[in-house]
Image (cartoon, rainbow, N blue to C red; front, side, top):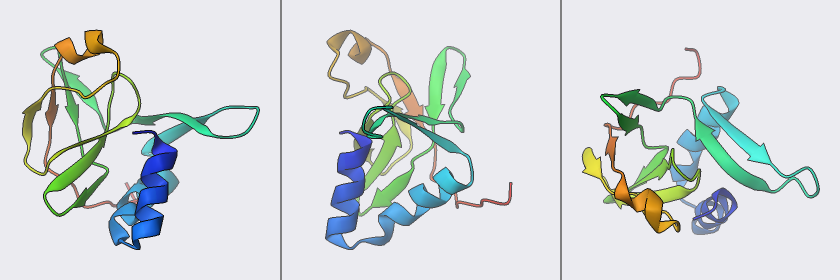
Length: 114
């Protein structure tokens, strides 16, 4: 899912699960890359993601019910997964990227003072 779609869904539903994401953006933890022509968000980069033993370790940007939302380090789009930490297969449109896996860490409390 594109980042703009994620934001629209969150705003339309009236749920507060967009708030942690917005705090991460304003705190500089997430960078949104935009098109120059129309300023649409093309890709997002989560600066909290790290690589350990060849595996990406990702922190959720938001959680809602039994779902968590992450920014995929492979394609830069939003993927949803079960809200439990552990290894996952990406949901990228590019099937070659699905041959990799990443590890979803536990959701952190968002603190913009760090």
